[in-house]
Amino acid sequence: IKDCRKLKWKNSQQARGIDILEDQEEMGRKEENKSIDYYTNHVNVDDKTEIKLEIQIKNKNILALLDTGSTINLINSKYVSSMEKVKGINLKTASGASMKVLGKTLLDFKYRDLMFQDNFIVTDDIKTPMILGFPFCRKEKLSLIFNEDIRISFAKERIREAGLGEHKIITTCATSVAAHCYRRSIEESKEILKIVKQYLKEGIIRESNSPWRSPAILKAKKSGEFRLCIDYRRLNQVTIKDKYPMPRIDETLEQLNGCSVFSKLDALSGFLQIRMHEDDIEKTAFECREGLFEFLKMPFGLANVSATF
Image 1 (tube, rainbow, N blue to C red):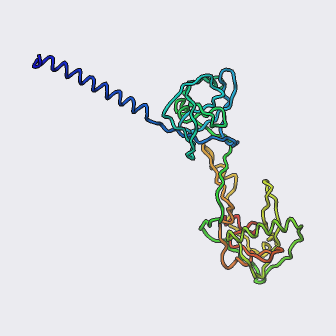
Image 2: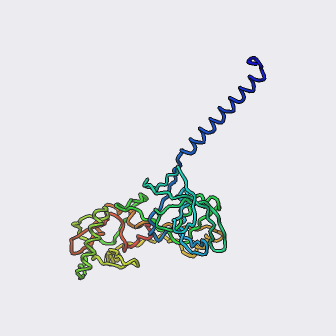
Image 3: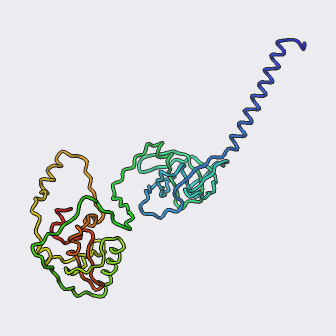
């Protein structure tokens, strides 16, 4: 019996089956102990720029945050009637902080007239009722179209030069032109001093001993801030005007005929990106209570600056 080939083959197959079963059980235990990391960008939501949708769950309206940076859908336990316990899921914020996972659930919810169903991780470590993450966006083939204006703030410790040329002031007389400083209130003087200090820091102006002099004035912007302007009227009277023809606006607009895509570029302090010619810097000198200063960059108010720009 010991030498029976059929019995040996049968015993070997049974032993092999036991080995395979043991391997499968071991793999199952490894899979069970394996942890999965999920990340979400938002925990505290107070930003008015976030995309929020009014979602309906079982006739209850809640706000859902649309977060394309979240690798999982999340919901607060207040809005879940039942959930399934899960193991091996690590939920973290974008900064690496851990979030407590209570379970998972399959939810049916409604947005406007559309019904959806998706899996959610349940956690109380979010301040918004629901977060619809990237899985939802990918599953529903979501496209985001932003119709509102988006303003991006740029650091402007120092305004860069365009490097495309310099502005010259060609005058008809050799003698300098000087005008007296205007009377200002204490508040206006403080605002001018604030702007002058900022311009000195950014390298836009410098202290001057020029025989030329024009008065400084303040102009209010729509935002409520103030712009420092110089009254260059007396200087402009002796400045030779640039007669090169400027492009007509109506002809420029006609060139847009047939176009379907339009864009515009708003240069940050565009005039101040153009450098003044060294010989003409002294002519830009302006007077205020703090002293005499002159522009290293092309200021507003000069004749021919539009043509140069």
